[in-house]
Every structure is written in structure tokens, then in C-alpha cells.
Length: 183
Image (tube, rainbow, N blue to C red):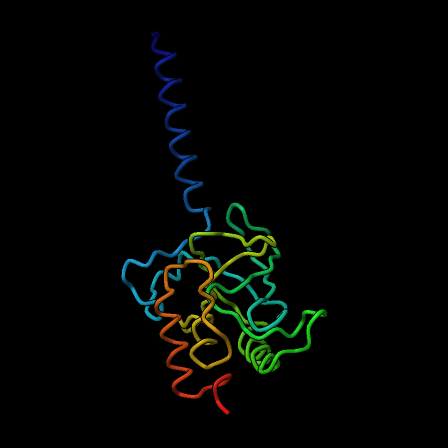
């Protein structure tokens, strides 16, 4: 192999290496359990920054992402991971009990707020919505806050890393007669 061919091969290798490094950070950030409680999840710097521009209902919002990583658009519908709030927008059903309160809390806390999105095993649901944990600027996870306050149920039909933490939050809300369980 000639000296020029060796240099070209080396240059190609370097360019491919830099391209791989440059694209490594453009993947959506995914959480791992690593036995870290969600309430103390610390890697918010790598999460996807977004602005909540619309609240669909208690567990679904629309966001605008300034610099979307690969696979995400600038405007996305986000379904919060691990929580199911009573329905308020399904035209086929009556508004469920406590749906307005859950939707109201989501509007109060998220509408117009800068948030951080983190993803679990699956990036999207069967409807094409992003599945994400929504973290507030104070570091708290809004998904978990909904359950702990009794505004929603732990949605455990599909596995996610913090399923036990969400189940425990629901049990505490039930025993504490918060929200849905307060009579």
C-alpha cells in the first residue's frame, strides 16, 4: 500500500471515528434503573430539554424541542410513562371522576414550563406518541408527582424501570386518601 493510500485510510478512519462520536450524543437519553430511585435521578444534563406548549389531559402533553435528538421531531406529543389519569378528552366516554383535577394540575405545573424528558426502554407507544418521564426544573419527576398526589394510577400494564416506585406511590396515596382515594 502506498504512503498516500495509508494516509487516506488513516484520514477515513479518523473521520468515521469523529462522526461516531458526534452522533453518539444525538440519541435520546434513556434512563436505567441502576437501583437509583427516580426521585433522586441526577443526569438531567443529558435529558432532552423541551417546552410544554399544550396539555391534552392529565397524562399527555405536547412539547416543542429546540434541538431534537435523532428520532424526535421539533413538536411531539408526550405520553407520561407509568401513570394513567382519569380520561377527560375521549368523546366516546363521559369525563371520568377526578379527570378535571388531574388535567388541571398538569396545566398548572407544566403548561409553559421548561422540562427535561427522559426515555425508558420503548421510545414510542402504538399511537406514535413519545413515552417519557417529565422532569421539572427542580429535579422532580412529574409522572411520579401525579401518582403520589392521587391524581392518577400507576400504569403497570407495560414494564418500565421504576415500576415498583410508582406502585408504592399509588399505595401511599390510597392509604393516605389523597386525590382519587379521598372521599
